[in-house]
Amino acid sequence: MKKLTTILLSAALLISTSSFAGKGEEISEAIKTAFAKSFSSAKNVNWKKTNDLYFANFQVERSKLFAAFNESGDLVAVSRTIDISQVPLALARAIQKDYADYYLSGSVTEMVLEGNTSYYFNAESKTRSLELKGNANGEISVEKKTKK
Image: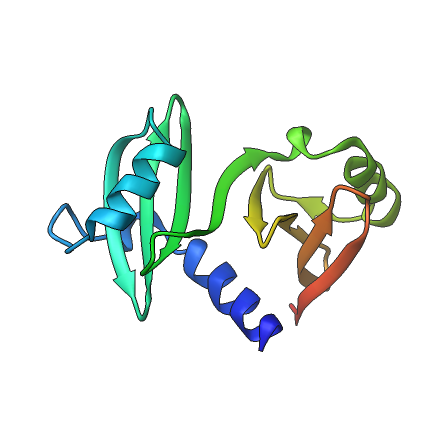
């Protein structure tokens, strides 16, 4: 169940900004208060409700962030897109060692879920595409393989 929740949250947080509704979503006061407390400098906030979760798409300074809240107003997960050069050093070294023959996209999705930070990125070779998940310790796992 925990793995299914992680997968669903990951997929939901990776939704593009174009799929978010405008300001018309009904958001409870508990969620609004929790959001304002966690992200006081947020601008351009858009909300979407999916099942029992509320997703906020917003901007803090020059960064675009996504956050998920449950109906009680608890922050469940938060993610942002960063440049691959911003990943932790141990992960950067593991990428250089294990994926030197792959083309890596320049962007990485950094996600904090249940207190753990993960980094999602893509790697491509001539024969396959990989969706990878890494952590700050430099551990990398293949989430999905696709043959070209």
